[in-house]
Structure formats: structure tokens, C-alpha cells
Amino acid sequence: MEKQGFAVRLGEPNPQGEFPLLFSREDKPAAIDSITDGLVPLIDENQGVYDGWGCEVVK
Image (cartoon, rainbow, N blue to C red):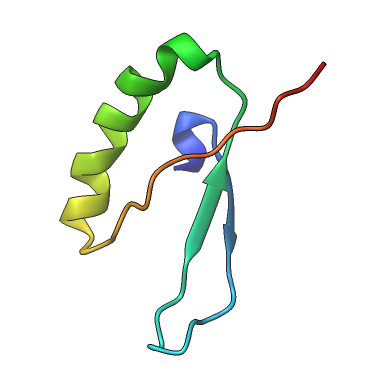
């Protein structure tokens, strides 16, 4: 993930004992589909779960 320009941090374990991997970077909203399309195979290969993306509105 870091090679793709993402900041990465390990989250606190949830009640199921899973450790979330949190990653972020700034991009243009129009590019989000191509970015996530590239992430899904990587996440699947590592038995991960992708729960979507979020963004902040910055004025």
C-alpha cells in the first residue's frame, strides 16, 4: 500500500479479533473507481475485507 502512495496504520482489534489496516491518501473524486478497482484484488489476495471508502469535504 505504501508503494502506491498510501499512508498505512494498524487499527485496534475488534471484538472478533480482527485487526483493521487503515490506509489513506488524497486523490480526486473522479479517480476513485480506478483506484479501488486496483485495491480489491490485493485485498482479496490477502483474505481481507474492503468496507468502502470515505472522504472529507474540504473548503
